[in-house]
Image (cartoon, rainbow, N blue to C red):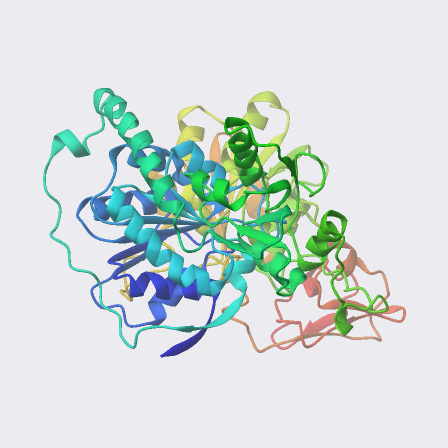
Length: 599
């Protein structure tokens, strides 16, 4: 049958076609739809889970692969940092079944803190990496990745980028999927228990294994040479290969070399591909990894070759590549010009700027505003975290002073407290992030006597990445109703003595809760509990009484809800956006805002 799916769907279907037995991961754009796609297809006999974080996901999957099963782990590139501890060790231990770690990179970055390159992690961990350039290739390559993992007993990294993850294609897939049979875990402490002596021996085996894999990769079908041009050649990898193909439009007089497996580098393939070439241009996203490997290859084999790319400034180091960017670079290198499509004409209007913003009616806006009002006139620092609530940094809220990585808001608040004892230090964290990486930070705060206020913004979902369930929602990806993990009880168990729960949309109560906590010492917590407005969108709306509106614009100036707009001199509420949360009515000094359920 044929399925029209996005790249993440193609990866999921490829894993199902490969007979995957277990899929685990943590949601993170651009990878989130992989597990969600698996869940939409019949998957009897396949264990499927959103793990509490990427480290847990990889450890679950590694044990499955020890048992001879095929296991896949999904995450974004930032999640690979979290999973790096077990990744480095399982690279030494090896596997019996297939273990594929999908780490989706985010050039741009579009929705990430960094532009880090998973190919570097493959080199660092000394494990193979596959780099697809399209959804069709992703479908085929994920199956090849499982085969490689089993053949060599190694975990394998799979590195799609945002444009591959979110592109769409029509793919031929089997009518039915069946998980692969496996024999189960066989006790062998000499193999599965990591000790220095074992690691030292296995390190040598890893390097020998990679030499063999490089030989295989030199004959791999997706490492290819197209065109017969000599003198100059273009080397491309990942989605950049698709961009170059579009620019060249099938020209056979230009040599195009594609590298789909950056590590172990297919050196023999590259030597064949570069025969007669005097100058090469490398087009790749993020780091100049392939470019560096070509330079090393040229040096080892004394090739008279000029290599152009990121290292000499021909290609930008940062941001995504695109057809337009690639076309300009190729024009300079090859002297060719791509014909512009009508839609690319110079007279096309520029796209509007749409900065990210908290949704109209988002309870996080009310939580931030309550803290801000309670702290007026006091020195306070606000440590943010990764999630929708990172947008609390935007004006007019301006309530995020730091944001580093998931869970760091809690620990950074402690560092600010220890070095700025005259300030009230707040840590904001979402409910999903609390489970993923926040709990250890709270333990650290209690143990080390920090004086902080923890604000858990509990909207009962993992909102930023697509509303995936988490341990506090009472359901999992296997479709089971499970016991909700109560954040308040967890905090009490850790030793947080003051835990207040309040609905942030009840503004006066929320402000009072913050003021009371500010007068206490030690680690105390406020659970701002209100469901995500995208999941429980109420029918009621608010409206402005024009006769009462005094045009002070306080509602716009202080909370910045996108449903509040100016209509001449007066404020108007866009009924298409309003959710009727009533926050604007609670701060209006003229009592001009009301509506259903609001006075």
